[in-house]
Image (tube, rainbow, N blue to C red; front, side, top):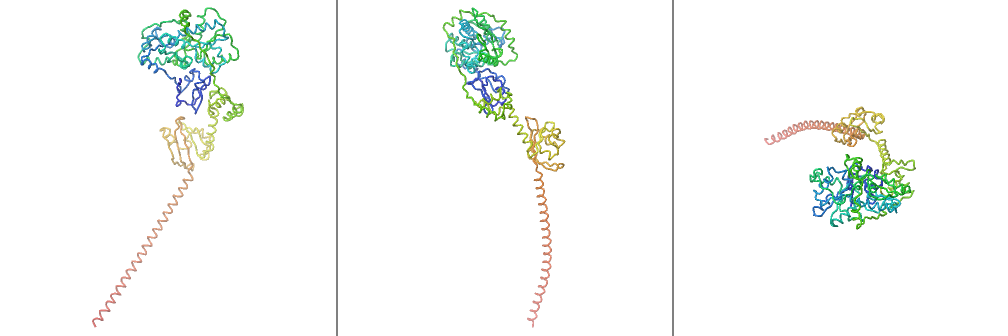
Length: 577
């Protein structure tokens, strides 16, 4: 099951998530970022930095509502960070508001923290571990299991407060009870599904989920009934979500001094630096509180309220929470019959490593033929070009992630087009200032590129069509325009470029075609004129012939008539005699 939902349609291949992922658990495939679940430690940084909100957390809110709708008994384990993240007048109002939503019981996860503290003090008293790393933060546990497996022996073999509390609640209310953890952490969702203890927690909600639900039900925490939390009073263990909270709890709980030096580390980069230092053998004989979130759980990845100051919350909680241990007798009643041990394992990925020759081959594909060519700018998300080349070999990255290389390639292609295109290319801004001008333009307008880039379009040609395209965002295609002053004709395509808020035009020289068409037209006119003259002459000849034929016919008629009359006259006289 995915924990961080990834919307590929929103990913704009900016690589910001890769740059901010300290463990490089994000791969780029088909120019889109994808989280690699087996390498992700769920620190939530990618969600926080994504400028397009392409990564969102999958919510269990509908699942929890389904539990209640089905009539299940649902108990909430609420992380102690609620004291700094929720608005209330008294702590009991938080309990009252959540019970209004239908939960059978609301209990503080700090109860589980008290048990975990007890287990830590036992380890400190035994003194058998060279160094002890707290295991309250599942992201820290993942970091070590996946990336620093040789440090696993230093992890305290103890479950987190959430798992401990879930186990306690299941024991108290029955295994059929649904236990819902409420806190600011997204890694808790993955931890709840870990096969080593997946029966302890049935769903995980964050404070954004619960605030949304309270708003839907029109429930105000500050106006809710004050119902005190019951059962174990966790006391100092409520400090777990702030930096040094675990150390404070241990110091308040242990009954005799141990020989470990105690300190805390928070923030992903600092945790990694500490692990590197431990790998070098520089840290020994210490009890180390490690928290992946900078400032502790109080500023977990789901805490989006910028008005919440982790410094103020830390000060307020340390001032109001008594640094006294939870009841030893109550804790022993629990630990006597429940186990809170956890075994950690090597989950390090077995990625193939390229040879030096393969690395060089990949580097050369992005124009890096020598170490001097390797800028190591980190724009792709990897610290060095070699790291990125290894990631390409492992199919975690793509060649085109190298931004300087792609920029140079695009620039060279752009320059190639501007220098070699047989067509005039012009780009103007909203003020009709020339932004780009192809080299061939000098042959037509008599201005070289350097001169043209300091000019406005109206200094060369009539900008009316360009202005119309800019104002209307409608394009002009295939318009014939003749520039008599420059003695050439063009076929123009003028388009608006929204991203650049500019107008691009290409002019195709059709002067020869226009001259040929003109000549063909003139030839047609001459031919028509000649035909008209021939027709006219033929008509004149026909008329002359007709006239001659008319006269000849008339003369013939007269002559023949006279001949007939003569013949008739001769016949008459013979009959009389």
